[in-house]
Amino acid sequence: MSTPLDALQRVVDDVVAPSAADADRHSTYPRAALDALADAGILGLVSSPDVGGAGAGMDAAAQVVERLAGACGSTAMVVLMHYAAVPVIEAFGPKDVREAIAAGRHVTTLAFSETGSRSHFWAPMSTAVEQDGGVRLDAAKSWVTSAGEADSYVWSSRPLAAEGPMTLWLVPSDAPGLSVAGPFDGLGLRANRSTPVTADGVVVPLDAMLGGDGRGLDVALTRTLPWFLVLNAAFSLGLMEAVTAEAVAHLTSTRLDHLNRSLSEQPVVRLDLARIRVETDRTRAFLDDTLAALASGRADAMLRVLEVKAAAAESAIDVTDRAMKICGGAAFRKELGIERRFRDARAARVMAPTTDALLDFVGRAICGMPLVDEVPA
Image (tube, rainbow, N blue to C red):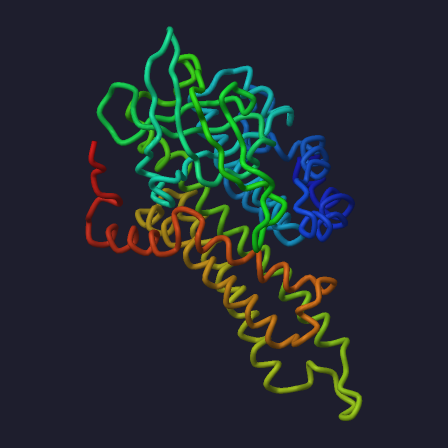
């Protein structure tokens, strides 16, 4: 019996990879790629079978993100954020939205980071107040992947009335009062439509709440953060594998005619190439161990989850930097593909929780401290 993963490589080869360079150059949201992924069942991969999804786990989602990242980092990030939001909707969202996600008709994403608290996603500054039988949301979200393109946002705010640092909501992207900033024109991931979103008097029904008033941080830490961190590691790994293959292809096919040798026959080049391979293999081992820890319920599973994005992000930066070095001036040309991996790899370091924030989380965890300090009311 075939599975969505069986069709993934065909979609990557036929749709995602051929459009990746143009999508990056023109900051074009990968709508055709998403449509193809939806038709293949990839967008409904982690949805429950009881609503028509494939019921796959984090390991399968990691395979998808890695393979997509090897072709187009922007498409991979859109799918990553979709997968990170789905577990919250699966647990607390309405059945019709769950069914639409499972069928590939609905793309969702996270709307956590805000202008006032930046990458400290656990401290939302946006507000939620009762109004005319519903809830009014006001916010200045600083970066939202698939802004204006997704069908919904898993949205954080301060609690409506309860104690606690945050509450989560399911907000339709076409809700009146939502506005999206202009097109994204950044260093990397140029096609993922990651832009600010503002809510000015957006009204949602009370039953749009996901997981209970004031319980949003608990929900985010248990149902979203593990997916987000592990899939980010898979994203970094996909970039590393791609840039490794591209570097090998260039170094073995390009010659120094005056020496009658390929670039790969230079010992210094081979040393850096070996370091690239070792670092990539080390990242895969770390990711595989994290997935195994989660699957078996190992005592160190959460520690591995906190570590894996930080480790993979820094490794991807090192690997893509070395690839630029050993491939020389050719790597600066867009047709080789390496400079796009170089740019895309730098996003993971600053995506909340950033590498520095994660290292602080790890330090807190091994010292028996709470991951975040209590946020003032």
